[in-house]
Length: 536
Image 1: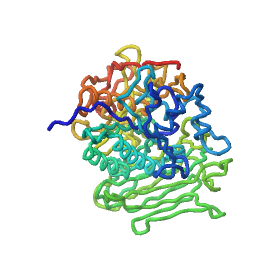
Image 2: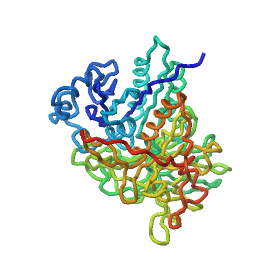
Image 3: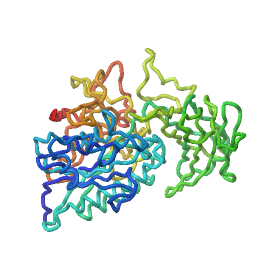
Image 4: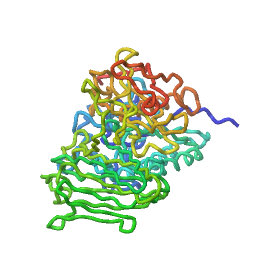
């Protein structure tokens, strides 16, 4: 018996700062948001604690009330209580979650959209305000389970409805094993077949990451009985710790030692026999630390290096230790009779948009990086056949290498088809084609309107406002929107778009053939319709 053709597709978004009273998320009956889990509240009315759950029955009367005032709604329900501390994205002209949700599901209320209900999860600032994403996995995993549970509750079981679900997550860390075995990747891979079995088939759309030019990835091959070094530049005035992960290839067991050397000559060393070391200042505060671990479930050896901030935070966070800025060295010795292959990723420590400046991103240096800039002085966007250990490929977010997710990068639209070009920041996969099994972006969506107009235009925090936001965070929800529309149009789970195109050759900025698949995946989705906008 053939399945009933779906007449609705649920769009789920897991983000931060979702302006749920915005007109772009309404229809003639009120709000299109069926469920919203505000994870940033302690306690509340939801079994998904900590947090507060807002349902359509709560939100619709608020937005339908005569003279409804969005600021007042947020003050009364939460999100704009300035008597409480913490970051308040709904008080800014733009918020990440509102922008992303609009790109994924927003519509003019006069269009009276009824076939794309919304389930949203608003993560707390501690999950996303710390760019290293220390608690992102927990909040995002619980958010996915919540959306799946609530979508199941919307399913019309009396007619055995199949209710498709498309979920967008536009956050991701830079570090991780990058082999599909991080905890969040395992959760996502487990939920996809579970959702299909309960007739809420699930597509998870992820942002590829914005790390291609950030110098956060290095790749080393160390000959037998040899030692090689990584150069790690820590910037002055960084108010957050700097962290690096070094992952050995699967099965590698010839590591002899790793030494972390500070600019002032202090050092610490770990070995397989002595896997932990740390250094403290005269007051007992930890300045630097190294720990050698065996990862579950892939069994790979990896090393975590952490260094204290390089300046005292006036707000008094992150303890009192201050480490020297400048060039740190990581010496890696191979004690075996075969080559030792490894990858190193530096964790993000930049400052997210709208937040108080804290982190200053550390990065790798390489004196052999002859491809860092072109002869005309402009940055080189691609690796090509460069010899540097600092790589632009294999810079995908650390949660994008699973088996069951879609990964979306960004490109510049321009005014002419000849302008189509990958955004310089959009992260790349490994140096082999996705058609041969490599994990590259699936395709690219618009993340910049033109070389002069950066970003994709979507809803600001208040109804009637429009703001640009760039990065693959803006590209991924456009793919989620397309998937939902195609599912409704065809009645079947969509694959890749049929009209993907390749970037046009650029004499002043060509894409080396060996980089093409890594950066653009299967291609760019062109000729996108701009959303209808309203000033209501």
